Every structure is written in structure tokens, then in C-alpha cells.
Image 1 (cartoon, rainbow, N blue to C red):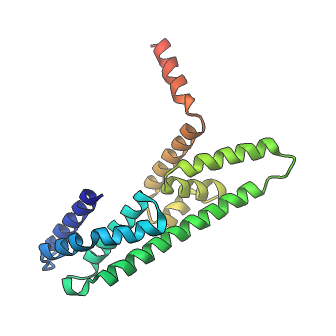
Image 2 (image 1 turned 180 degrees about the vertical axis):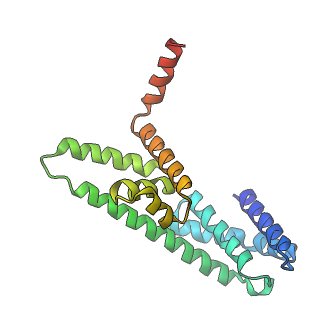
Image 3 (image 1 turned 135 degrees about the vertical axis):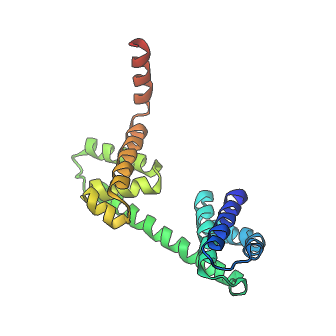
Length: 192
């Protein structure tokens, strides 16, 4: 964790310095070194997810670098407040997503057991996907957003969203039928 976050801080210091803003690189690095473990521990205690904790910690220090060029204005209290707010935003998004999935599952009637089993299988496969892939599949397939509308909503290009949808569908298919890749490779080996 420490290496990836350190790299981000160093890269951000370089970017800020090249944009003409006078920055003492060592000051941000010193702040990072002094407080990264404490911010990470706080976030991890609240969410118990290592990768999410790293992401929120990284976003917190990037926000610190981008917000000011005066090291004295960045305090541990400010860093913790930013980290807490960012974590709350992420967790709120996850709850909204899970609520949508529950609505999809709840829509099945008692007589549709096969359909319900299939929906639960898809829900489990969706939960294994990355957050971006789950989001784009939910918005596209469940909410009915077209790719251009998704691009506008996610603030990305249409080509980027098309690629994201394609990768998400591929990942979902692989998660639903992990033996498909093995069968496909076996067929290629038999018929060169």
C-alpha cells in the first residue's frame, strides 16, 4: 500500500510543480509520511476493506495536494475529515446499488423459482465484478441508459463507455460460466 500511495504523492508533486505553482516537494512528502498510516487505519477501521481503504487514502492525499500549496493549512484533522467524507460517499453509492439489486430480485414471484435462482446467480456474479463494471451494467441493462447517456452521466467519452460495457459483459459472462473459457481453449486445441 505504502509504495503505491507514495508514488501518487510524488507524481502529484511533480505535476503541481510543472504547472508553475511553487511547491516544496518535501513538504507534501513529509505530510504524507507523517499521516498516511493514521488516515489508512481510520478508513480501514470503518470499512474493513483493504483495497477500498487504499483508494480512499490515496484520494485524500491527492485532494490535499490539489487543494493548496501551503503545507501549514493541511492538518491531520483536515485529512481525516476528507477521508471520512470520501468513504461515506463511496459507501452511500454501494448501498444505492445494492438496493437496486434487491428490487430486481424482489420482482420475482413465488412461482418463478427457476427465474429467481437465475437472478440470484447473476446477483452473485455481479457482486464479484469491480465497482465500475457493476455500475455500468446496472445503469445500462437494468436502468436502460443508452451508451451516449451513460457517457454523459459518467463524464466519459462514448468510446470509453462502449469499451467499459464490453469488458463488463465479458467479465460477467466469465463469472457466470467459468468453464466456457476452458471449453473454448479445448476446442481450439482440437481444431488448429
